[in-house]
Image 1 (cartoon, rainbow, N blue to C red):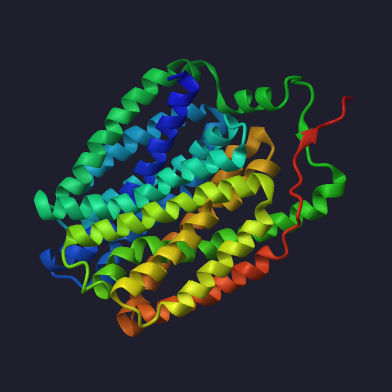
Image 2 (cartoon, helix red, strand yellow; image 1 turned 180 degrees about the vertical axis):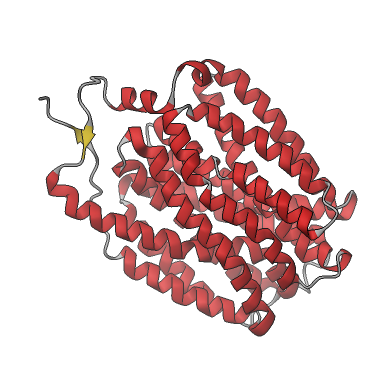
Length: 407
């Protein structure tokens, strides 16, 4: 395997691990800790909030450091930091200790999206497909969190669900440092990005004047959809094990079976990103945005009251819509951002996205405690409809930066 392919593999494994470690607690809280620690689910999930706040706010400094120091260096920090503090979560004895561990896991996990996605886009010949393949790994991490945690709960206990991903992350960190050592030491992120985008260092990239009004409209749409879609994604990924525990009582009775159901749904839904990636490179982002937003809206309207197989089938489709939407904003940013600032722009985007994820956790708990998941599904349907309206305002053509005229 060539070095670029091995690097892409490690980036994909990092994306898998990033989402896995952020969602282990969701399954642990739903299936074990509410009994072991004697706390209701709606109260327990609030202890995950600091981790998701860190997951959001540290994205911006992570992107900034990557652009000015080393993107590969920041990825090495990601693997090592996530590994160390996953082990800390495995040793937690109280809710406060768990919240502290999750905060630091979130802080280091925040590195991945602004930095890892920038590296994926940099090395890609087809941006849409590269982001789609990388997104599949991330989505498998979402489903794998429930599956692996369920297996660990039923076999060796919930602490091992944090312990083994921590060990694996440390091993991957050592492997990443060994592979990318020369880039970490000798090739700062900003210098490398500028050199690739513009072989003539005297010429910078810029956005043509004729495209700036379109660029402003795209930016506002990205900000809106990234923020509001984050609530949908968090509701789907974080609450899915609990949804399946309540709705699949006739077909999934153990933690392992609930984990398998979550993993299978996430795995099948992830394959949709291949189609999305291909169509992003051919049909463009507007068409795909409209399709996935409509799919989510319809499925959320159908979900209230459903149980067992019908609930599983409809859940498969709304998870497919949620996962299929993920690479679209990243594709647009990858196309419109100047390469030397791409990691910083991704960082700003994920500050918004993951801050919304954090804020949504207590809201999800409050909705569930007072009205149940049926009310949440109806709220998600309205949100998906608003995303559809926003996506309809996207232009058919996405402008790209061009080399500035020589002076």
